[in-house]
Amino acid sequence: MFLFDAMDTIFPLMFIAVAGFVVFTFAKGIGQWNKNNQSPRLIVEATVVAKRTSTTHYHDAANAAMMHASTTYYVTFEVESGDRMEMNVGGQDYGMLAEGDVGKLTFQGTRYLNFERY
Image 1: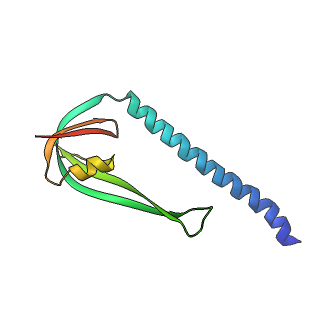
Image 2 (image 1 turned 180 degrees about the vertical axis):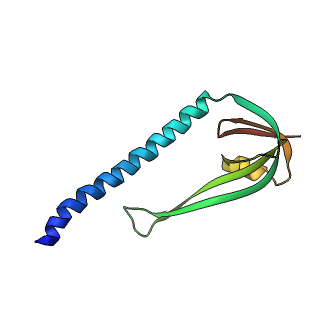
Image 3 (image 1 turned 30 degrees about the horizontal axis):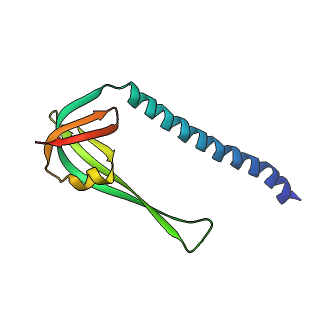
């Protein structure tokens, strides 16, 4: 009996915790999107100093034998002041950039828009 009473308490608490985390993550993303939209578009001279990828693997719920992968691409830019910014870029831009490239970086808040090599 004690186990069932404990589950009656633990399950709703876990559900509320998970739901709260989902809502928090969603609200944080909307907040960042809005902040980026309110930020001015800036064009600065920058150098590509690093590149990296992050790959996530997951299984298809309908077919356990199917596995999918998603890759996120990041580039770190260094501006004239010496500050560095890591930005999420698309795969095509990632492939076209090389460490050491110098050019004009266009961004809005934390949102990468373009990099034009000199």
